[in-house]
Every structure is written in structure tokens, then in C-alpha cells.
Length: 559
Image (cartoon, rainbow, N blue to C red):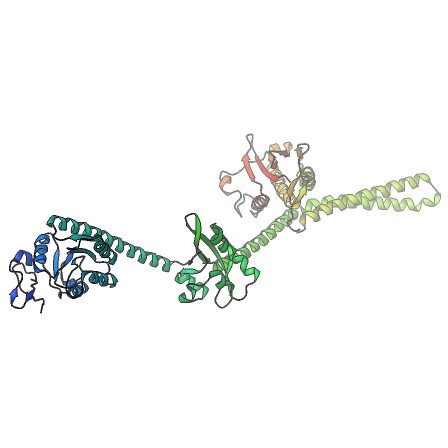
């Protein structure tokens, strides 16, 4: 019975000998051949990483020729005399290539090849048939069982060498490609599993073919429960309401029409039925110009939504505080102007009192039936009415300026707006013995502003200009207020003074909160003005006057 034995050889390799009865069939096998032969029951991991070739033939002469042909070419050679031995050796040694005879006793070469290709551990072994059968149908049958080539006997050594080297080269390339594909698959799996975004792969029907761990965790569905389920039906569950369908409609569009969709604010549903906000993209898989599935990538934006809500709350609070600060600034201006307003209101009230006293005296004389007294009394009463209206207008302007209205934009005539502001500022102007001059272009278009807030800005700038000129020789020049249309979008207002000018660091600090050059200033006036103009979509700027002083300019959007 045939068997393998291990015998030491000069090269330190294992000599495989095939013995039948007491006759050695390979008397011509030399040490050089033995160095290139490998015994079947030696584990593959104990052998150098050299390509192994299994030679299978029931004819010892054929095996000897093959051994001599392939020896010395860097291969480890294995031998088997029948199909059963070939399968055992292939299972243990995993050769890269098998040179396989077809006509053998017992199991023929076709069956050996078939079993090799069916085995999970041997299916990638390259098989070349060597046979005296050279009929086309025999070759076709061999290729159908999984062989890659067919060498007819008797064979030429050069042909065997060339075909073996060619097939081994192909085998190496296939193995490298297979290893690369496995690496890519492993890399892809690691990447997908490490992603925080959930991923669904869908077929043309919208059924889930792939889901990563994040998708399973976010939806609460076990991985095995997701595969082959319709994503849309999974999300709709039994509810099926229209509201849910709207959030999932872009997925159906991508599947049906092959159109990529991005949704920034939608909802997906958890296994338990609760919803959670998501942003997701749905990209169709196109084959020959037609959609054949899609990839859905989604992110749970619950934390983002909470952050946005918190941010919006903070912004609302900031806006509230800003409005309070603006109101405080107006009250501060009124506080500074209080003495002037008291004097301004006192004048018409004193006049009213005086005219009332005159009227009383004249009424006492009405009994004499004097027409002159009646006319004088009528005139006094008329003057009382005029002065009362004057006092009322002053108080109305103060109340309108000081009250805390809602920030409402309206279409406002800029000419009237500037006129009303100048009237408010005239109180300070008279107290400082200074004049306010206006130069307003005709036919200015209406502007879209909050009139009270714009008055606050203009009044602040006018009063700053007067204060800068109060102790200067240029005070007789007065403050100039100019208004003009600069383009089809804005009306510009300029407040020009010839005062002591700006500090050297004004460009960097002037609109900074709490920066002031006044000994009793709060440093919020210009900051509030800057904020007001910005909130209207305009700009507040300044530059130094070439002849001394400062020019402040702000723009208002045309309605």
C-alpha cells in the first residue's frame, strides 16, 4: 500500500518517496529533487512561504518527468498517485496549483477537481489537467469542473513550465486582489461601524440590505430585524399617518426618480413609536442610468435642537436686555436734559398763568359792557390756548421719546423725523447758547425704521456735538445736521461738529461698551447707537473733520 515516509537528506529538507511493495519506483530521484519535494503530512505553517505545486498521476514515469521539469524553479513539489491522496494532500498543504491527471483508477481527475472547487478551503487552488485525452468535449468538461488549463500528453517540458508560470502568476494576482478586497471590506466595516451617523442601504424596493450599528442603536431595532424590511414601512409601522409619510417622502423620490435629496429637519421613528429629529441625505444607486436602490445617511439632531433652543432663548434674552439698555439710555438722555425741559415747559405754563390772571381781571369789568375789554379777554384766552398747546406738545415729545415701545419698523418720512429730533435738541441748544442748522435734501424717500430709536441715535449725536463745542471758540458755528439719499438703498444722515475732536485711540475703542472720555459719562451712548443702526440694517461711521471736529454718519434703509 502506498504511503509517505520522512527521510533526512543533505539539504535538510524532507524527501517524499513513493514505495510500492518492495520496489522503489523512483531510483533516479536525486538529492536535488528531494530538496524541492514536500511531504504531505508536514503542516503548511512549518514550511517556508514558497509556492507549492501538487503533482497527481498514477504513472510513476510521468511524475518523475514532472519532478525533473519543475525542480530548481523555486517551488515546493508535492506528489500523489491517486485522487484520494490528492484531496488529502490538498486539504493539508493548500498548494497554489495542482497538475492533475484525468484517467486514474478509482476517483478520476474530473471528480478530484469538482471536490476541490466545492471545498471552502481548496476552492481557490488553480487546477491544470494533464491527460492523453485531447478530444474537445473532454477539454470542455475539464474546464466546466473548474480547471483553468489543459495540457495534452505527451507534453513538452517548456510548455508545462510556461503554463505553470502563467497560471501561478494569475493565481498570485488573484490572491493579492482577494486579500486587498478582504482588507477593503474590513476597512469599510470598521469605518461604517465607527461612524456616528446611521446608515441604511436600500434595494430598488426600499428594503434594507445593510444597516450599521449606529442605525440600529438610534432606531432601537436589532440588526437582524432590520435586514430585508422596508425602511418606510418600518418607520410608518401601523400608524401610517400622513405626517409621518411627509418626512419619509424624499426617500421614495430618490428610489423612484434617482434624485438625491437632503433634508435638514425631519423626524424618524423609534421601534417603540417615539419620534426623534434627524437630518438625512438619500443618495440613489444608479445602474445604467436607472435607480436601483439608495443609501440613507442620517444624524440624530436632538442635542442640536436643544442647543438651538437654548441659543434662541439666550438671543431672546439678549434682545430683551438690549431693549432695556436702549430704554435706559433714553432715560439717561432725558435725565441730562431735564433741567432744560423744565425751563422749556415752565415758560408756556407761566404765560398761561399770566394770561389767566389778565382774563380774570377783564371778566370783572365785563359788567360795564366794554367791547374793548371783551376783545382783550378773547385775545388773552386765545393766547392761553396757544401756550397750553405748546406745553402739551413739549410734554408729548418727551413722553414719546421716553416711553418703551415695541421695536416696530414702519415707513417714516426722514424730513419729519429729523425735524422732530431737532426740536427735542433745541432745548439743549438754547441752554448752551448754540444753534442747530439743518440741510435736508428735497424729496427724500421714506425710510423703514423705528422712529423713536432713530431719534435716540440722532439726538445722542447732536448732543455729543454740542458738548464737544461748548467750550470752544467755534461754538458760534453750531452743529449741522444734513440728510441726503446716497443710492437706491439708503438715506444718509450726517451730524457735523467743530469741537475738540476725537481721541487718538477712537478708531479702536469708540463703539466699545463703557469707553468714554467724559468725566461723568457711562460709555453706553454710542454703543447703543451703533447697535440700533446695525439692527436696522444700516451703518454708523465717523471720521475726523479736516478743519477740526468730527463727522458722524449713519444710514437708514429706504422703504
